[in-house]
Image (tube, rainbow, N blue to C red; front, side, top):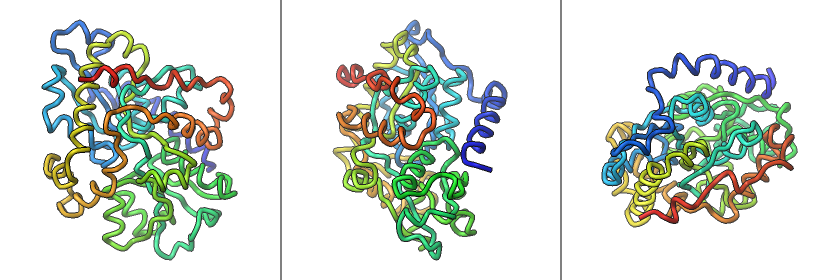
Length: 346
């Protein structure tokens, strides 16, 4: 089955189940949040225990949502692509996920914008299984490459790295390897030869000596080498109409997140780890702290979109995403993010 076919099949399944299996998430608070004295917002996180999305749970742990006067309900969905679908289905108000979804959704006639930018780089790394025979991305040909799910940001980044090395998508096999223990199992059992993942999975892979890092996009230097510039990733994004109709609620949420980002900047990885739920460390507190330390530098200090970020994202997607390739002349990057809320944050 081709990568495109798998993506279409996955999308069809998600769409079919959107109004049933998502019911447990609760109904979105819709467009009337600002009418409440103590507004509510439901946010789906594309992997709530991933270090790249750490600001979401940390903000809750620090009590900053409460301090800002907003009731935020965080929901977990390991795949960013699926979290996006839930938002579009009206099951949640916003998503903590990769900014690039705002770009790809514009090609489908959807206006989605990042209102606070958590990270200036992906926080991802392409890791290679020991014995897989891969020493560079040019060796991807004929290999099994793991991504979170077809159509996810990890899929687009993988496609870009492969195509940049002269390996088209039909010359390797895309495998939905998930994250965490599922991804580790795929490495252990040779279900994948390489894959795109984040901390703490990267830290676990290294501790168990399962493989090595081929492309490290947890630093600005590594990201610029792999992608040609800063690639803003983790963000809080939502439907433009929701932000327009509920500016007070959105501002309160953004205030809380900006406060958290400043807190992360001024505290050590040990301090951050100590504030997170104990179950997030997987029974290895030292390893979890190491994972946070390895990715702590990805976060912005103020929630502002890097000036060169949107263009880099567009450059990557215009070579890896078929929808962006087909509509690249119609995309208006200025509509995919706004800085007005972070600029007004207090």
